[in-house]
Length: 263
Image (cartoon, one colour):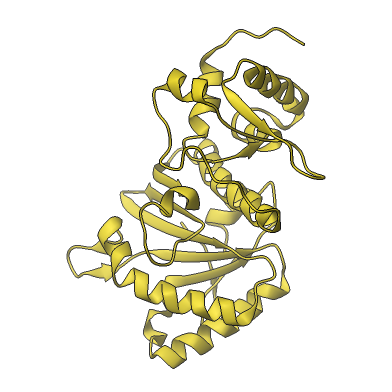
């Protein structure tokens, strides 16, 4: 086993677990290292595990997952609200890992766009401690040119229609209530909501399905005028390009033939 010296990069890695309940070595590599550094990252994470800064969890037919251990929380003097994180059911592994990838893309955006600021980033493990109603899979608050851009993310992999329609109804309730209370998503001048609720899927055909279900449900609810809240896009399941996700016109707007960007 290669000997390492604990350094600032290790502190950065430990602090990442204040956002992410679990990370794979590939995801840690994506956050802090170049793509060809994966073997080094795996060795470093093993060392951090052996030194009891991290826990390492075996997953069937998957790479190890890592989480923050007690010594890690003491070292950084902090712990997330979800500590220790609940176990993720194997049926939800793909969904969980893709949620990580979306939030990692938000962090990586800052490396390629120095005019953008990240004010807040929350995983659903944290959001579940803040919201009683519908909880998005992730939330980020960005700003550019003095304009604040809050985005709630939903990851959908082969979603069924009835469950999706229930989600849309729940979102309409939460954005008119507790979401406004918990997050600065309303313009104080006119009380207008400026939140975007972004649905992302790695299944290309599902974009059209989600758009059609949303349009139908909003029509039933008499909420067609609020359709601009929603965006729908196809993205890869991992290694999501931050510029593609946030700044390219890949996001479908309901009731239009338009595609737009998030920021």
